[in-house]
Amino acid sequence: MDLHAWITQQVDETEAEGRAVLLDPTPLLRRCEADRRILARHRIDPAFPAFPGACEGCGLDDWGLPNIESVNDCPELLDLAHAHGITDEILASLDRPTPPEPEPRDSRRLGLGDIHATPPITTSQVPAALRGPRWKP
Image 1 (cartoon, rainbow, N blue to C red):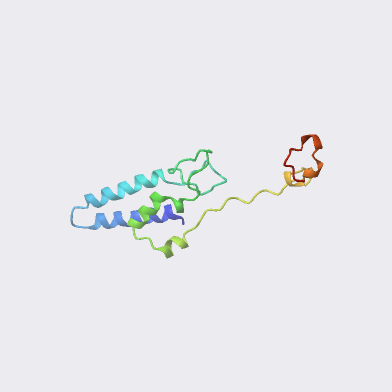
Image 2 (tube, helix red, strand yellow):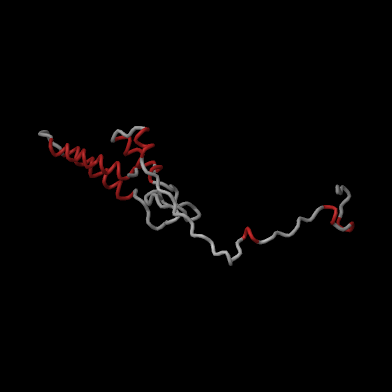
C-alpha cells in the first residue's frame, strides 16, 4: 500500500463515520469529497514506466520528466496524510514503487562502455607554433 492508497482508506473510514453521526454530517462529507478530488489529481502516472510511482498531479519538469518520482513524496498527498493523522512510522512502512529491472543486454551488441576511448592528448604534444609566451608543458 502506498501513500495514495493509505489516504484513500482513511477518507473511506472518515466518510463512514460521518454518515453514522446523528449531527449534520454535511461538512465532514464535503471534506471527504474535497480529499477525493485531490486524490484523483495526484495519483500514479502510468505514462512513465521508468518512474513507476510518479505523481501525475505534480506535473513535469523542463525536461519532460516527472517532478515527483513517487506519490509517497507528493507534497499535496503528504498534507492530506497529515490531516488524516499519518505518523512517521506509518509513512516509513508504506510501499515505495521501484523501477523495473533492466533487460539483460545482448552480448553481441557493443555498448558505450565497450568502446575504447582515444588516448588523451598531453600538452607536450602541442606543436611549438601553437605554444604561447606563458606556455607550461
